[in-house]
Length: 483
Ligand SMILES: Cc1cc2nc3c(=O)[nH]c(=O)nc-3n(C[C@H](O)[C@H](O)[C@H](O)COP(=O)(O)OP(=O)(O)OC[C@H]3O[C@@H](n4cnc5c(N)ncnc54)[C@H](O)[C@@H]3O)c2cc1C
Image 1 (cartoon, rainbow, N blue to C red):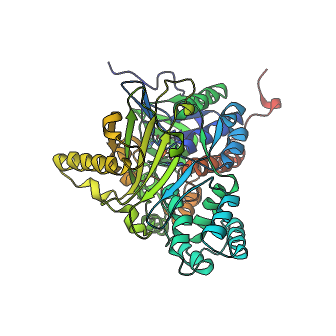
Image 2 (image 1 turned 90 degrees about the horizontal axis):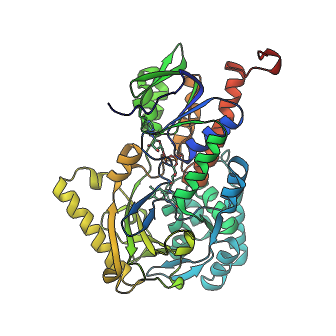
Image 3 (image 1 turned 90 degrees about the vertical axis):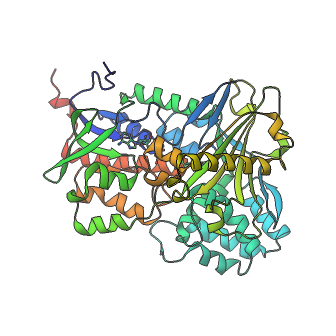
């Protein structure tokens, strides 16, 4: 008989969280900490969503999306998770750029970028300051008509090299382009510039393990291998979810899955207003990714000066479409040294990441797909040779992931790496106005994606749910509790 992953689950919870990405995990933890009964349902056999990892023979452990996040993670993890998690966040010092316009190493913070822009790129100090102040001052309630391209044009007209320095890493960090609203750039760029780029010492496996322990302490009922088929609605409010052949009732649902998947697959378009459905239909998904995972043979090392993050490109100019093209000219190499997992085997790993279009991979025959993956690997190794000489002979393991891989493991529509474009945020926020008790806390709107964005969005949405429940399903006060 197949294992019952819902064995012992109750018939009703205050809140059901669908999906265990960082947004779902954080929402579940905050809600449980406030005394709510929470069921967390994850369809995969592991928690973490895109914040995940995998092992390969030889003691190699690869992280998928642990390349770098802003300093703000420390505060968010300390407040909404644990001191232990917050204290494991460390800075990456070696961020490198190598392209036909410039090669440089930076700590990727405002001081160093100011120095580079003034001394190396010859921009006026006052212009640099005004640019940083403008980017820092942007917030969600601002005018959203200015695009990132227009922002750059205002401060650095005709300076394609400056635009490349300022934009290329952010395009990798959240898929945003020069055509997206400037606010999506300003918020994320300023978050990084506050203090630089950070990572989690111990690796994603340790982070998710610590999060699981904390959720268990707070009483979250965590279930893996539990695919939610349907969110059931009655009388304009959330009633239950259908999962693994069971129906479990609830007062509120937080979907951490893809926004479009939540609306059109889990709930169904017929449950929403026509205008809302039109608005949701018009939401554009963000791009997907390809990755190549490479492990050096035991005993082989990488020189520490190679850096932690390397934004490299052979394209003469920075162009968004080139960053997405199947004919890859730009990639980010992440170098993982043994220090990232001090307790693990001393292994040196490299992950190459590239933004990608789902359609370039989705319609290939199985043979074409395998060939395309092999081509991706060969091309990546050719480029890596420049930074890790003789890498081919020194490698123990290499494999590739494509947009189909991300779609398969997370059920993100079109394997989207960063949720939706900006307009998705308003749709995500409007869900509870359509159906009482229905919420979405997953990457969307560009600013609510990435590790920090999704954790913060999980907190925001958990607070909305707490407010709603305080009226719809108040917690018993001590006076009403039976002795
Ligand atoms: C290649 C790559 C590299 C990245 N690098 C970085 C980086 O360096 N720094 C950074 O900050 N961000 C990075 N990101 C982005 C970051 O990983 C994501 O924005 C973030 O992890 C998404 O979190 P989320 O809460 O939206 O949930 P997701 O991680 O998208 O998880 C959603 C979860 O919901 C589950 N689910 C979906 N449908 C159902 C269902 N019906 N029933 C049950 N469960 C369901 C899925 O299985 C999944 O576990 C990267 C992303 C990719 C793809």
